[in-house]
Amino acid sequence: MNFEVVSHLITPSKIYSPYGGLSLTVSQFPSLSVYHNQSRSRSQWTETQQMASANEGHKQGSAKRVAVVGAGVSGLAAAYKLKLHGLNVTIFEAEGRAGGKLRSISQDGLIWDEGANTMTESEMEVGYLLDNLELCGKQQFPISQNKRYIARNGEPVLIPSNPIALIRSNFLSTQSKFQIMLEPFLWKKRNYAKMSDAEESVGGFFQRHFGKEVVDYLIDPFVAGTCAGDPESLSVSIYDCFGIDMNNIDPSLCSLTLFILISFSKQMPHAFPELWNLEKEFGSIIFGAIRSKFSAKREKSADPIPLPLQTLTDALCKDLGKDELKLQSRVLELSYGCEENSVSECWSVSYAPIHDKQSEEQSFDAVVMTVSYLPLSVIITTFKKENVRRPLEGFGVLVPAKEQQNGLKTLGTLFSSMMFPDRAPSDLYLYTTFVGGSRNKELAKASTDELKQVVTSDLRQLLGAEGEPTFINHFFWSKAFPLYGHNYDAVLQAIEKMEVNLPGFFYAGNHRGGLSVGKALSSGCKAADLVISYLESSYDDKLSGEKPC
View 1: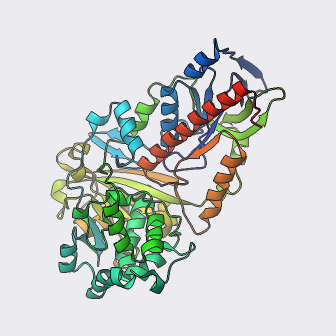
View 2: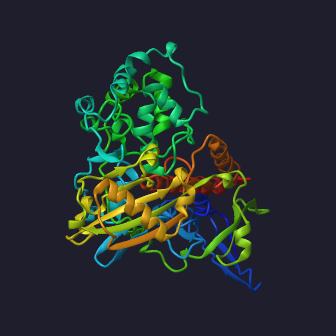
């Protein structure tokens, strides 16, 4: 099918982002033509919307239309905001459903998420959307969300929640504790510091500052638990998995190292580039974090908003008409040009049903499509409460890679019914366990039966879960997360080049700016703002008679 546009917004969700990666392109298209590849039949839809007056047309934007490629969370957020602004929007989605990798399931009294499980409201745009969608009253805040565990020597250990607790605990060795406490003094003077370069790994960066034990038992499980990666595969200057906002740190949750590492998990999505920059400016990242904290204005709290997350995407889709959301429509090609004797740009979006073989062979950009992705299996299990000998109250437990030597093969488990009691009947514990990522890509692809054995073995060792689970559900994400590796700057440059070379094209989503749901929502809203600004400037150019190309 060929969808001709004079201005469009595209979100190519099939540059596979876990939360619906989004590329945006704007166009102002008064006429559309739809071409069905299979039948070779052509139907023409022409819509001429003449403006009664220049001023009225500018206010209403009646002739302005935007194409959004990808109905993931970023694309839906962008489309929602554009519609609020009075623009006509058409969304193209390759899959048979909208929402990307936000999937919430309700079955037999259980509620679980097969993708992201929580998000935060630290992004201004998230609060804006929740207010507009009237979801604020439906928020439920998790119980004991501040208790987190990390497996060590085959057993779950509570992460110390403040500096004194860290010093008193046996979580880290005496040597590591001293290295943490001395970091502000050893690294404060930048002249004496061995600064990192852009190619340094996340693991190498933190090992220089805090030692190998901190990397093995804090950084590694933290990275695995948030984006299924490993510290050595990720570039410290690019890695945006977390999205830490230094202005938003709650000191009551922080211990010396956790101040900049673990406690950020409350707001996480773009962390390590900021820490890398702190080292460049201050030498010590602890000292830099403290300075940044007290020199900046405190922003909105980053408490989790753990709705079943599909509630959000369903609300964003609710008012979309049949002609506004085209499912099973993979975008094959985008082309841009300028019509002769016209002051308007011309965009063309070619798309086809998902079963069209041609759609499998096309790509948006050769460099962007070189992105590596991490596979992940999500295993949902329930156990009778009387069969769990050591039920832990808290958020969940992360498993460091080193714990594989103690027989643990999972990345971590969320205590879903501990956080949200309404997610399971009162006599059951509901757990969400993650397997695979860069640590064990092949295991992520294993059968449900094999993964059931892996998960029950880990839960037996960590929580004392006895017997077989009363319920199991397995969902496999072949491309769960883009890997922010050492060559990822080439991908970012390619995206920027597309935006520069294609007027009216805007890209957003988790390929840059952060992997979290909040960051994906925020990027969609910000892209929509850019589209609106672009269309307004294009209108001004049209009035002045200037050709854009």
